[in-house]
Length: 373
Ligand code: THG
Image 1: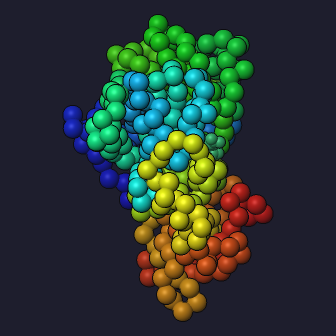
Image 2: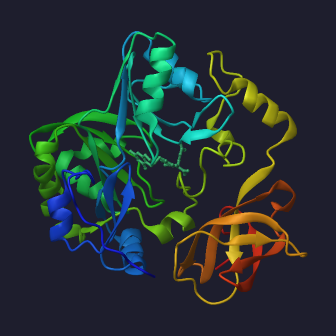
């Protein structure tokens, strides 16, 4: 896998945890919301193994927040998402796709409701702030929309519960999935949510003062020694095994949310106005033209996550593209996500991919990777 160095200039925005991440010997960063996002420390496979057994501390400050606050805040969040955000309690997180007037997916954030009229969109990698500001201005809404000084820190893995209970208190074991509390850790006010971009469970701590980043890190790092804590990051192998899709790779503004498999996170009949209503109603009737599917790719172990391979039918016509691909030690197989024409999306469909000139057999698999081990 080719690894290229990145120059950490001021233009590439720094995380408040960066000093620790560098001290911990980060091997690979990716770029996310114009920030560095550390993703590999030891190597992808051993990072994955450790994540599934212990607890890791993740610098996910690049998951930026877009704050929407003011009298019309709910109306604005409703307008930009097909999910019924009016049902989101204060203290609740909701995974809610943002869709434009054509039904295109703008982003797939976690929405946090901090107060009746105050929300954070915890965004994936696309420019949400400017779009939301434009919508708010165009509609004359009474809201402020801005990027607050908030930097999430992830604690992921099976021992995250014990670690957070030790640091914050036993009551944190009762925080339900996608709920958060307000608390103080290392002398700084944070939100503590049960969430995170792995299938291994854990928490996300939303730091609200970047001057306190290293203090917050150190508290968990020291308390985590007895749990064999290590630095980590969203793991490319584990996330595909767990079925987590990444905006920019597995869906883009050209995807509709049906194609992207986000039906579960939409309420097309919600009472509030939303700008994608007509477009999504149309697609709901005909069904999407394409679908994001799981694929098993035959042949040698894959060693590059770059996603440019075409999916071909029996006559070598292009019927899709691979969006993410990786070798999974757990399933002893090359596992992948691909966007294919809906006609070729049912489980068991056999196709091929053009793997940089080499043809490989592929099969559409179910979304849980059942029976692939
Ligand atoms: N945490 C925070 N912000 C984020 C992410 C995160 N912003 C960017 C990106 N990740 C947003 N995308 C997702 C996608 C999936 C999930 C979370 C954020 C997720 N999905 C669960 C699943 O698919 O199993 C469950 C979703 C649900 O049931 O509501 O967790 O990770 N702060």
